[in-house]
Image (cartoon, rainbow, N blue to C red; front, side):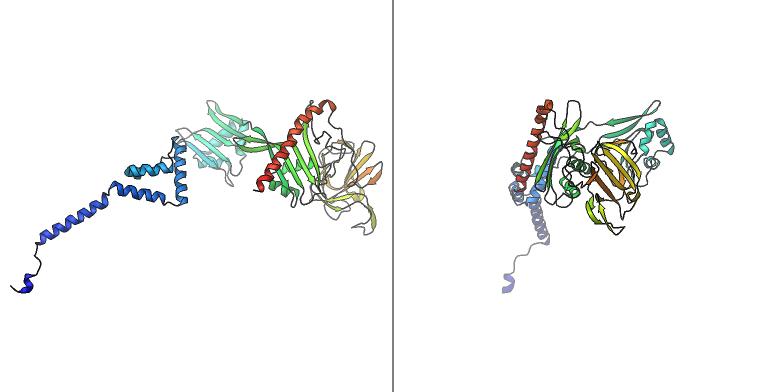
Length: 472
């Protein structure tokens, strides 16, 4: 035996070596699959502590959703960490509570009206034959309302196991829905009208460009903007007096169904600041049931005449005794004010009176002349046409639409030529001082103040709160 051979390691059978390798592999796999609870708990705790804020918010929201779905209390994130340390396997296997989903009956169908849809095409979409449409429409006179479809309107169908229509329902508006229900003798029509809750709402706005745009930006609807202009129309000429920086505050009635605003009522109180001068108005209904607007101290907002017969028109030519006529091209007195506005814009009577003329009058074209008592007379020229019911010899009320902007007679474009006479003499309607209407009756003054003072106080408070919050 040589020296080198004496130092060689002892040899083991090959089968022994393979067995040892297999045992080592099994031990490693066991350690990976079955770690100690202490190690697993430490990893879970570390993982929760190192979560990003976004991930933690997501977990919190999931927990909140589980509360809403199950009506069971959910522990805080800290309690979840502690529980995960004690029971790691249960935490790892826990599944989020399922969120309940609204389930429709198997025979319930819904369709949304698309462009070009008819009642027949909608019936076809839910598998109903054309004969069903005729049966439905012939069942009740009011059933034809189902054929007056609007884009985006939803129709809900209920069918019996045989696939026949038993109920048809549609929401016409936020306040109204209609239903047809199958009975023994055909379909029965039913209209359901929701009764809204009435509350008061407040808006504040500052005029940066036009009144209509600024009011819309403040959240005031177009109809309420027109109402506000009408309330203050005796004192403010919305055609030429409005300036950037003018302000308004409005409290109005708002109709609400299920927390959603579905319509508006009248303006309850308002304040308008124009060129640094502030006007206030309060709506008051007297004991006879007549409503009108008054200043905060009880004087009537209503004068004998409104300041402007056309809403939001532009003054294209003022009263002048030496204006050059644009068509005749010679100096000729312009004894009125021209209001330029789109063709068809409504023209309102400036006050109550008797219609002396509703017809053609030379260069004035289609003209209305109104006599107001013994002292005042107004003229409206170049009309496109007359409003229904306005005729010579008839009477009109203040604010009533009497005609529409046009360009008849000697006119270069659509506008209203408006004249104002006092005892037969032409005066500038923009500078004429208007007579006042009657104030609150003495017998109702205390009742009026009991309503107006809280409204004025609320506008002050709402505005102060809004300004304070905007400075934060």
